[in-house]
Length: 248
Ligand code: 6PG
Image (tube, rainbow, N blue to C red; front, top):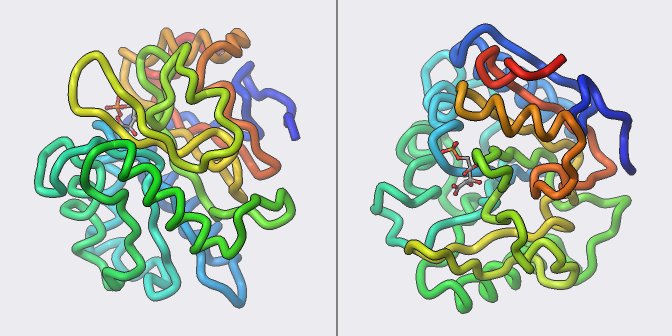
C-alpha cells in the first residue's frame, strides 16, 4: 500500500506548475479525466478547505469547466469543517459552495456538508452519514469510499484537521472526530483510514510559505500528518514552483 516516493514525496506522481492558474488547470483536468473513467455508478469527492483550493473551486465553477463533469453523478463530502454557520467566511462548505458548487448543476442532496453544531455531535452525525452512504460500517480496502480525496497541507504539516501530535491521528475506528483547537472554532475531521479510503489522493499545495513543509515531507518526516495518509489508491501531488522550491 506504500507506493514508492517521487522526488522524496509520499507519491506516485508529482505535478509542478509555474503558477497557481496553470496548476489548478492541471488539477481540474486530472479530476475530470479520473471521474470520466468511473462507469456505472455515482462518484464521490472529499474536498478540503483553507485558502489554497479557492482558485481551483473558482475554476471548476467557471463557464470553461462547468460542463466538464457529469455533475448529476457527483457526491461531495468534506475532509474537515470548522464548527461555524455555513454563511461564515470560515466555513469550508460555504467557501466551496459559493465559488463552485452553487454555480454547477449538482443537486443539493448530493452535497454532504458536515452538520452544523457543536463538534462532538456534528462529528458523530457525520460519522453516521458516511457509513450510511457507504452502506457498511467497515471500510473494505477493495471498495474505497471516495473516488478522489482532495487535501491541502498546513505549514505545520497538518492535513484536513489532523494536526501534528493529535490523538486523532491514531483513530482507527471512528470515521469522523471532533477536533478542539487552542483558538476557536473547534472542528470536525475525517480520520486517516477514511481519508485513505479512496481511488486517488490529490494534495494541492501552493506558495513559498509551504516550501519548507514540502521539503520536510520529501525528506521523509513521517511524523507529519500529511505523510500519514495511506491509501491503495493513487497519490499525486500538485505543487506550484514556489511550494516545490526545496524539492530535489
Ligand atoms: C482547513 C483545511 C486544511 C487546509 C490546510 C491548508 O479546514 O483548514 O481543510 O486542512 O487544507 O490548513 O490551508 P491553506 O490552504 O489555507 O494553506
